[in-house]
Image 1 (cartoon, rainbow, N blue to C red):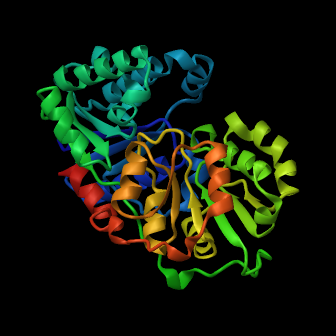
Image 2: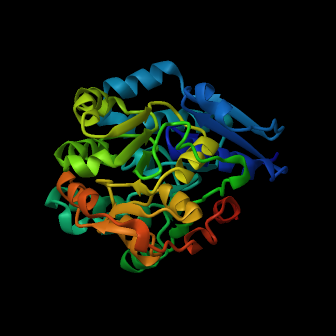
Image 3: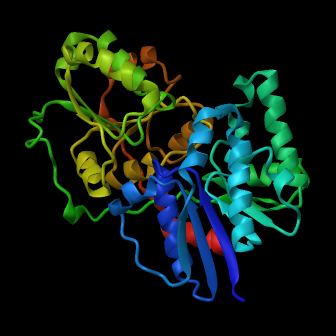
Length: 378
């Protein structure tokens, strides 16, 4: 009987779909093993954004709608419900190896559902070390308890920390463990021959500064802070600016976003693409822009936008703190704000000058899909 691995994801939004695709490709190369992908049913709506070759060793199944509804209705018990779903799928297929695209989504309950015969691995995005000083006592205790579980429970194989080489070394030493591993954040360079500058098509004059904010737009991405900063900024500056928002606007901010959008539009040119945008279109928007805005509130984790900044040599506008600020600073990739708030964005908009910014491109070295796949599957 061939070895079987279950790959689980409760979401297909943002980078989740990309990572599922990378792992699908990696699994297709290992012909002597079977892989079962258990995914959110919305996968069927967005899978056409990428190419999925048929593979005899890969099966795709979906979380049942009744389970999705249970998660929606019991958000406080989300991790417990996800563990039940995961256990059911693992039992159905007699699985020993499990890989989660979001390992934290099943914490802290997963060791209660599996014993040491099961090998559970997955990715952690938010690295608590970078938010420690700003965390309250309860958050600190919860963070420490989770990592005590990671380092002591025998169900965990590899805990991959995304895009930080130092954190795995530190955490393995701190918790006397070998479970933490570095995982590069994969970036697929977009062939620029397939792209075009969209300024003329979008009626953006060449003398304007274009600020691009893309991805899954949500409260944690600082999307609303950008609109507030536009409203608060000097009219003469905004008259010579253009803002592009490209990506599905999350339910958590949709009403607020559109309620203040019209006021912001009185100050400056704003273009909205409230939809999942394909990679070539994002690449063309990057070619058309002067800055990439990432005023993220959760700066304790990385962002795939860094790869775009590196490829297209566009300055990133980022908070100076956390892993995000550390990476932007280390790789000389843009402008660092004291924090993500509209006050500091306003200061930047009114004083920016990208003419003297030289963006380095070595960030994307050793951060390709092959590095990502090989690290996980080896």
